[in-house]
Image (tube, rainbow, N blue to C red; front, top):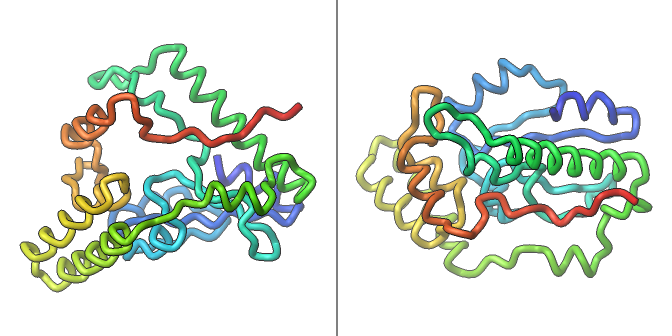
Length: 220
């Protein structure tokens, strides 16, 4: 998806910078297999999540050629359709699959419009709307990121028990961060945190979204 969009819009000065919030062992094989033409980085310590208040993947921040944020962090074309799938066959109901396609298409069309029209695009937000949408982390979230990075460092040094305590504290302080939780969770054979523990956490959301929808209107 992102490779084809990059190829389509490269002539308009558009690029994609993908950052995996991962320790590397899981993300690197996927990146190498995809062989994207745009830059891909691995942020082992989640510095980007701390700076931009990213809590899940895929999230995106639009940044213009002046280095100015045009759209703050938001879900990048994903939906909660996966919550309706059959967990044994992974089949999606037709309506959920159609909604997933609709939302992804809407998001990508908005990116195209911005890449081609720049500040004239209705999807490029003005300063007041950007400010109103920027997340405002509190002290607990700042402490969560500090404990999370400490936990990662302890894990690298072989202090697994101490690392687990710090990671658990980080997750308690910042329960909305799926990115943090995913690093500490059990992984399946594909290296993904997608087992029963994941589904229990998703189910506990109730009516709250896993992927809060991006506020993007269809083009007139």
